[in-house]
Length: 63
Image (cartoon, rainbow, N blue to C red):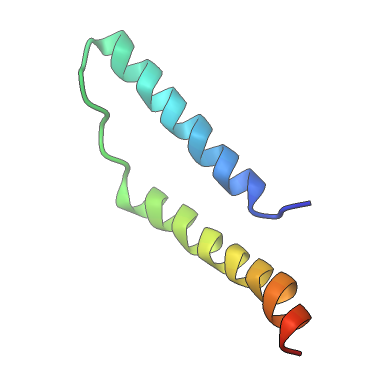
């Protein structure tokens, strides 16, 4: 199980939904992501992948 998968899939779903909304409104570019939402996704993503890197690489090869 990859604990980062829900974060990545969530980003794909969000971008897909943003694309669908832009197409419905006739826009050619996506609206920018709100900064608060972006950071609330980015920080947990970094922490999860750091934890996975520690568990699967550092702990196995160096400790």
